[in-house]
Structures are given as structure tokens and as C-alpha cells.
Amino acid sequence: MVVCTGNATLLKPYYKTSNYAMKNSVGYLMRICGNKVLPQMEALFVDQELTFSQWTTLVALHDGRIKTAGDLAQNICHDAGSLTRLVDQMVERGFVTRDRSDTDRRVVTLALTPRGRDMVEGLAPKVMYFWNGLLAHFSHEEVDTLINLLTRLVLVADSKQGKKSRLLISDVPIAKPVTAKSVTAKSVRARKAS
Image 1 (cartoon, rainbow, N blue to C red):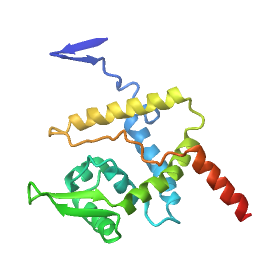
Image 2 (cartoon, rainbow, N blue to C red; image 1 turned 180 degrees about the horizontal axis):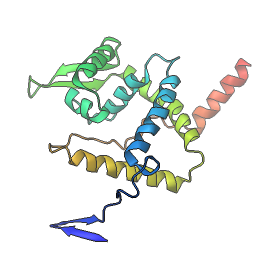
Image 3 (cartoon, rainbow, N blue to C red; image 1 turned 45 degrees about the vertical axis):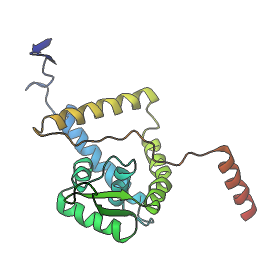
Image 4 (cartoon, rainbow, N blue to C red; image 1 turned 120 degrees about the horizontal axis):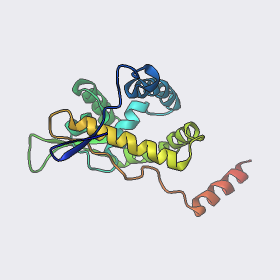
């Protein structure tokens, strides 16, 4: 059943008292998925120079659209206090710059340094390998559907907050492209080393 309200079309509500359970609760499934995946993602970074949380901060700054601490907080879901400490660490370690805006001195802009960009791009293959492992039993179409549905859900949830959205979901790839030349050079170096 489709219900029309003004210029929005709403479908008949999915949940009823007779069918709402943990096994079909979108909220529960998203929460449990996050709780299962996050420790595994953090474990990927134990031998790295960054934590997973620090890396996601750099990823959010990667394409240059997120420029302020407020936008960064909205897009990586950090509170202002923990984000300030996180950005302070990133600035201190030379991954991020923090400068006053030329047009509005009240605004502080954030940007990746070349070192920060190299860190994002260098660790991206490790994260992609992890996700490819988790998604190995899904077809590409299923992964695309999952991404599209989650994106729609994020956008709808964001629109329900009653304030102007600051959500900036990037579509800029974060890994350095691998060329046949670079793969060949790496394999030659590896053979020489052995």
C-alpha cells in the first residue's frame, strides 16, 4: 500500500507489533554489525602509525570538501571534545594543518598534509582487503544494493534531525591507483630481495 502525503509518497509501514523482532530490526542489525566489525578494523591498525579512528579522520579530509572541525564532527560522528583531541594529535604529528580562514578569521580550516595524504592512500589497500574478505560471499550487485540502501538510510536519518545537513559523503577514491608498471617494479624488487 502506498500513502501520499503532500508531495511525498510513503509506503505502508513495514514494522507492526506482530513482526518487530531482533532478527529483522534494522537498528539492531546495524548496531551488531558495527560492534562486530569495529574491533576487527581497529586490529588492522595495531602495527600502524595511526589508530583506525585517526585514519578515518584523515580519510574524511582526503578530498578537501570537509574543511572545518564542525563538518568533520558531523561526518565521522565524533563529539566536539574527542574530535578536538584527535585533530590536535593529527596536527602535532604532521598529518593535518589547521589554519585561520582568509575570509573569516573566526573559521579554522583543516587540510591534509602530503604526509597525511600518503598515510590515507598507503593504508587504503589494507582496509579494502579487509572489506573484500567480508564481502567475498556477496555478488557485486548485492554490494552495490547494500551501499545504495545504507546511503539512502543515512540521508533520510540525517534529514530527520531538523537542522541543515552538513553531511558530505565523498565519492573520491582514496587509494593510489596500481599500474602494471608499479606492480612489475615491486615484483622485480621482491625477486631481487629473495
